[in-house]
Image (cartoon, rainbow, N blue to C red; front, side, top):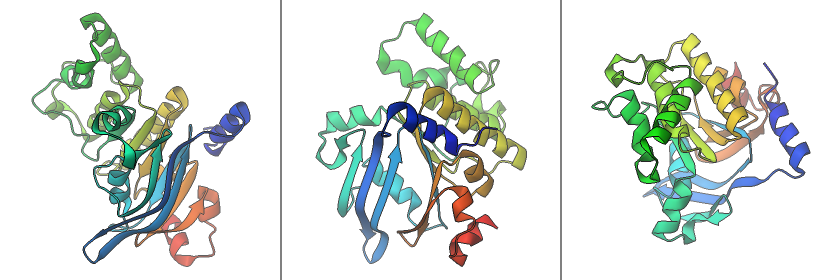
Length: 257
């Protein structure tokens, strides 16, 4: 497998200075006396996979929710694809959100719909012809290695298959940014590795920029160009997998043991 760090290096060499697609500066968010995020700075560049590591309660999910303005931060700025998220009107915010894909832990498929209907659902507002939708569904299923799954119900899918269909549904709109929330949770080691490799394939094929929240260190090793480690709402370390596993900070190094 190609060293994943080389992907972004090649992108920077090709385009000069890499484009900043997410820029989070001095972000803070509290719930009462619970200070979840504390003066956090996070950046993501075009074509980069950024992995966020941290124990439960360290602020990973709150960070994602602030990014798409499902939560309003107390302090700080969030710029996504050149847009200051705090100053967007509702219609402008919706346009930016359309450029962001989200793969949930559960894959969040509609259980009453077939796989085909699940993939068609995000296309309903796109004014696509039935032929165009059929082509996109076929391409989507092929891209995740499940070309014959269109007529299955979610209840007929394994956990790994559900994750793959969830990813196909998200990618059918060709988002610029992907947010992965614990993409390998609940999967066996072999299937987890397959999903991690699929995340890499999406990055290479679509040139997506991604934030990957995970507890799975093997997923981080496979997918990450860069890793940010959170501790109690603060960024305590940042670097490549190889750099952080040799960290002088024993707490940081414990993630990699």
